[in-house]
Length: 335
Image 1 (cartoon, rainbow, N blue to C red):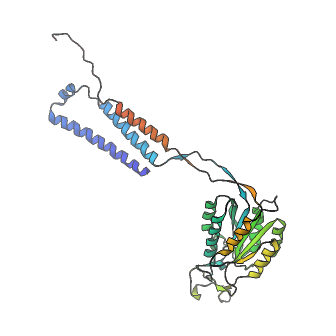
Image 2 (image 1 turned 60 degrees about the horizontal axis):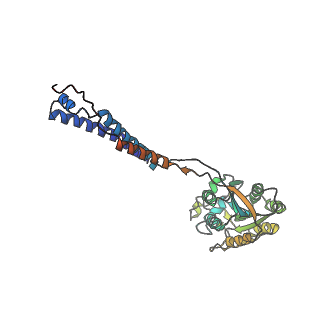
Image 3 (image 1 turned 90 degrees about the horizontal axis):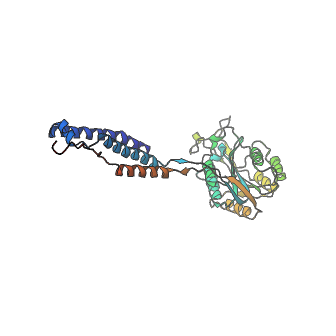
């Protein structure tokens, strides 16, 4: 909308052209000095002032149309629910296509639908591969959580591998350390733990009162890993040091042990996405607590004040006379 300000210089040139055109027309009509005496009440200064009012009104109207916003504020929202952290595997193995379009895309779609079902529960996101990263802290702003979810991919964490233990450890840090309940971790991965500390960290999660629900993505028989997430030939698949194609397999046993350790459950991902619905049903039956979270800053529109000022300028331009009052001196009856 601010590009409309280019109209103002054009309008100024237009009014200058009109004034010159009127002056030239008066010259053709008769003697200019004589015409000035005959039209003494005509005021060029008043005309310029009225035009300036119109131009100012146009400028402020354009700024009003651009919707200026000021006055941010942070608001705390309180609801009843529990804290839920979703830890999603973003390692290269999640690019395998034994689930279409890929394990990672399937996981992201399921989590998005899971967020849509939440009612008052805080949600947090952790991305992990060879390391774990807090992608989105616990929040009641589900829209923000979806934005962070959308950008989760293997490029987010350059460290290769799958460190399930680090993902659990990062979730323990994200939860309130003073509480021993109202905490749920949803772990979405293909289960290939390359560091071997997943069960140890599951024991620590149990001591912290965290219930872990595991969702296995993939198939136990295995699938090659496309290097670009799109390859359908062995040329585009990840290979080991011997030049052989790497096969990634769903490790359900590890995930079952993690869930069993913390009192949670294990589910294998399905096309109908029933597993996250079942997890939500489990969460809905859990004891709730009062949760508080800060909303994103919201800007408030302030264009109304500019519109009021524009109206005032237009009223002044309307009532302000273009001609001045000329007082003639009386010189007597016979002068």
